[in-house]
Image (tube, rainbow, N blue to C red; front, side, top):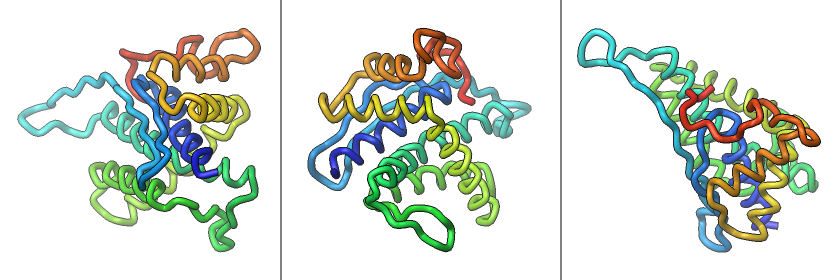
Length: 199
């Protein structure tokens, strides 16, 4: 069961990364230790300083920050959704969300997303609101039928292989997103986006 949730966790990061325009370079899960696995991604981003030494927060930088936060949160969202499917998680009645089973991974995801929020917003309430919005939109993004199928397919492959290079992971994601031979859902038929800005 732990291995299965770790596979869903890393698959959630990877599928979110592909949907947000990142390139997956490697995905893996581990049998032991506090760190359950890893999802390595790559992105091409052009940063332009505007009027002096300090670059302004441009629209592209904000889009990148949102995409990076979504990728950071995608793992714990997928893990919780998989656990709920299996009936392993109880809901927090106050907020209607599951208690995370393995807080180490979920806490790490939250810390990464919070670090991004702190770069965009100065005040804690704004940061919390950014995280709430990103969690909600990423949850909707990942748990729609076709996209959840991609998470499930990648998690299944990870359970068999333990580690996948980026090309194989993206092929699995692309095949699962493609509705019966048509173009890949939400990606224009191509799951690799080396030059596209994150969404």
